[in-house]
Image 1 (tube, helix red, strand yellow):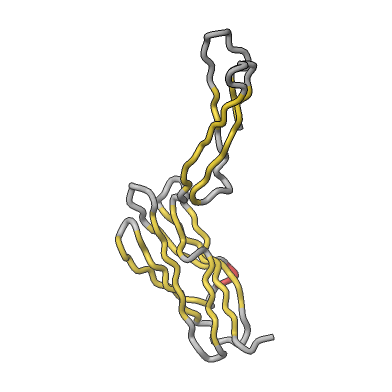
Image 2: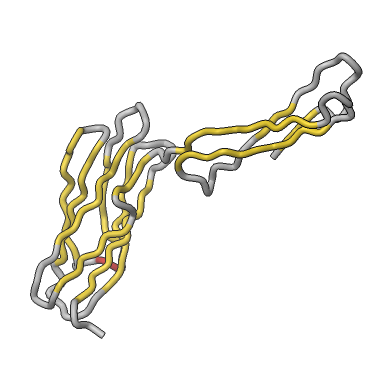
Length: 159
């Protein structure tokens, strides 16, 4: 989005303000804008806005955990919770949404307290069917108080 002074007197100055909606951007980005004028010596100039968008909290390798294996096996998987902010992060609670109740158990390992945690998830369903549900992680981060980790159990050989 661009805002700019529409009329600038000869010899005067004006401003161009560029903003980027980073809601759907992750990582490095580059955006360009062309400013046109009636100056015969310089009819246009290209402006470039570059930056990097880092989430407040990263889930690595992502917000999805797959518990895959044959019937009778007790698979485990993990997701790392990485604090990208300067202020220490506290995990206040972890609980399953209604769709995971009694199907998994978990433990939180403090890799670097305040900045890196490992959430280890284990299937305890003892069932023959797969499922998908959510673990809800509550934090003290004002910008990201709730995280959702999708947990999926797939039984090998299941249709």
